[in-house]
Length: 243
Image 1 (cartoon, one colour):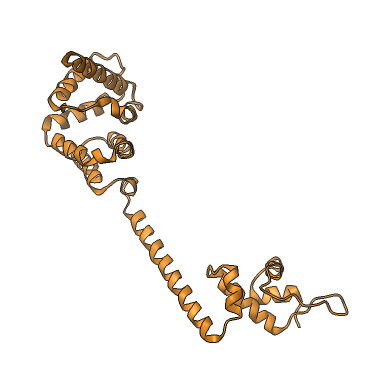
Image 2: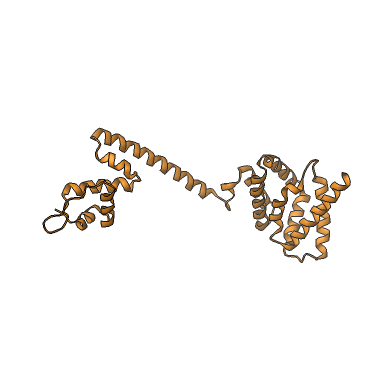
């Protein structure tokens, strides 16, 4: 006969766990003997080991009770079901690990493959990682704000990157990131960017709907903030003149 401490040690659980299994009705609690101790049989140890094994496998306690009282064929069928569920969870976790291992800067987790390809293309053109990561954040915001516009934006971005002038302007913006906002070189860059915007503006395009997106690009650099503010102001003036 075993004390509660010996029973717990035999099954590899704590005394507290044994008492919890008593409380939920999984393991019968024996009466105290003449010396005031509860004594457990070998069958109690076997039952406790079965309970611990099922609980460790993730089987809910309510289901464990049914399994402990099931006939051999019912128990075997239930164990088969549990095994299938565990295999499904393992496959799911394996897929999660595979996806995480594929991540490149976290982009593949939240952005479609065609957007990730645009970001990789920018890297291949020599655009700084700082600028690419800001572009990534902008795509994340754009996807949340206007997901239906994403395919057209991808086509537009790829078309723009086909233009050597676009690449030159990206690289120039990289160079300007730490300039003073009042640096006269910034005026020339703004003029060049504005000319690019005029060539690539589309009818019906509404830059104000992308305010959050462009603010993410500009917030890391006072120079970029001035670029964005000036370009937005000029675009508004053009629309007012056209209207």
